[in-house]
Amino acid sequence: PATTRPLLVDVHTHIYPPSYMDLMRRREQIPKVIKDTAGNEMVVLLKEEEGKGANSKGRPVGPQYWDRAEKIKFMDTHGIDVSVVSLANPWLDFLTPAEAVDAARQLNDDMQTYCETFKADHAAADSTSYSAQTGNRLFAFGSLPLVPGISTKQVLQALDQVKGHSYLRGIVMGTKGIGKGLDDPEMEPIYEAIAASGLVVFVHPHYGIENAFGEQDNGHALALGLGFPFETTIAIARLVLAGVLDRHPTLKLLLAHSAGALPALSSRLSSCIVHDPHVKDRLQHDFRYYLGQMYYDAVTYGPEELALTERVVARANNYESKDEQLAYVDRVNERRDLTAPEGVFPGTDRIMFGTDHPFFPPLEGQGDRWKSVDENLDAIAGVAGWGDAERARVMGANAVDLFGLEV
Ligand code: 5CU
Image (cartoon, rainbow, N blue to C red; front, side, top):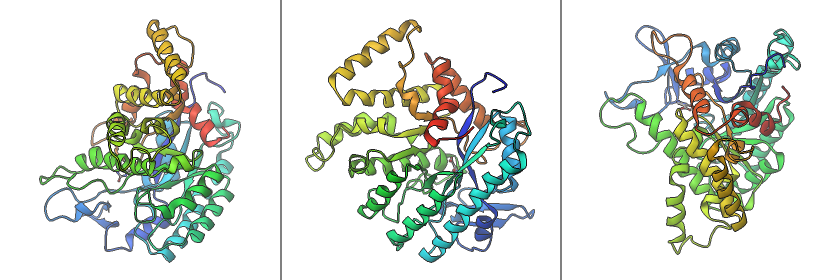
């Protein structure tokens, strides 16, 4: 590489390809695209946005959602070398099975073209870029037709298509699975096939939780700030408690927004499980163990929250064996003088930079750089005790390994 700064890879960055925009423009029900009084397109995604008077209706949607040049411009502004893009919510959740099968096929082709043709158009154009040697700056998650009434066969056919597309390195999934949640026994063959494929599952919220909007017009602040991450928290807790990770330990789950409240609540949840006769013997490990089996984006906006995520992931080892627990305590003690060797913050192996682009753009007059991005970069830079090695992993090296990126 031409510079020595760490590679920066964005694993949480969305698009609505043109075919998906057209789908939403044709709809009268949420999710839909409408025009405001000035003729600007607005995307209305959340059911509460239909409410009378309360809460803002929709958010502006423009080329930043579908135009690849806009994505690259955003990446260049923030020094992002590579992005792994995903379809934004609510994916295909609102379609009939037949529609979802067609839409998934189209979108997977669209995503492959989005990445592949960038390489063809721009290979080695920028000699200062990390990707100059390969020309790869874009990879993507594919989509599966995960809707009620779909057959396993149809889902697995879509998975085969994703596997056949060289730039698709995972699939994006909401929290409903095929309608009943991620702990639905009907998801079993799907998990099995995804685990065998080695693809990463990016689990992302959309529905929020009841009452998250509030009675007053709070805009989207509470729904996105709290409703979304709590939705992920509950969905993943259900998945773990159903034994999915016991049966499929190689399933690679990447959790949006650092898994929401799961890191902070995992010990309480563990205690609730072991004190409940219905579930106390269900899992092979303490609940906290499974947090070390998953991956997290670093979309926490604060160094303390990021540090917490890392500690909780690192702590998962404690629940494997007593020796591990003692070794871990030694390592943390050693780190107090900040000269400890690498490996003191093992949780950093599972955390990856993300932006959430094109959501959370700067408001009028806030400049070109996005505050939402800078806060997440500053968080990585500001975790007490992390050194260059930890930061480099979280910024990009982990993503290169997890997704097998050729950069
Ligand atoms: O915070 C986020 O990830 C998002 C998202 O992906 N979609 C959305 O509608 N709002 C916020």
